[in-house]
Image 1: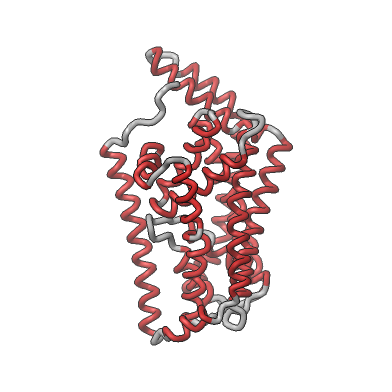
Image 2: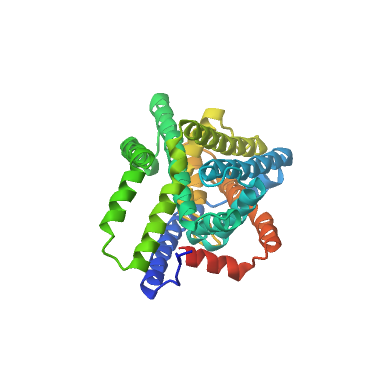
Length: 357
């Protein structure tokens, strides 16, 4: 099999450090905003602690169950991506790789994203590049769902006529245009992958004939693997199944947040539609992940709860921290156990993410 991964060269490492540094700066700036709010309003730590002490832990447990179900849903959806390469993919293998992969994201940031497709390729005996193509498909479908939820959030705000603070009015002003543009681009990409992947592969293969034999063989193998990875989009049935799994995935996510609101009953009063609006806004905060810290989801959650739904800052802060724990931290123990069972340690996971990146 051609070698697809080589150690990172110094320029790539520098670029990676630059992006991580930029992300850290963004999170730091958001944290400074939160600290300024805390200082300016004489943050009541007793109220923050009290809101956690009075949680309904039955609803908390149900929210954890729902977030756990999203990992199963992701494994089932990935099985659809694998069908063209392997008729009967192993669901336990996919679930294990999914849990380990999200643990790697929590521990190492976005480079950990590459652990999951790499593990799936190794476990299922399929080309690694095909699973990176499947990962791209998964990201596109997830982003499409996020945009749909965010679009719903914007439409509800427009219809309600609710007052929106200055910190959020710019989001509403440009949000509709961003959703329209990005959604159009995603649909164009999905259509291109569905209908033009093979013609593009043929043209690229012909154009690369001038390469030395061994280099051409590696390039041809890579192109074939990528086309195999997006093969599932050519089937109407597979496309419908993937869309259904994607919708279920985000329904479970909304259900998780709804249960968390019920756990805060008396402190946070949101209708089901309010919860969907809230998810629409904070889902964008999860796009920035810093190793061991998480992303902007916590700060965005506090901002939306205080500015849009007029929740007390102390309660909103506790709510945001629990969101981070449930959606980001809870998977780590299960992921580490699965990694140990697979014979993978901290250093091997980190090295795998770097090499795959």
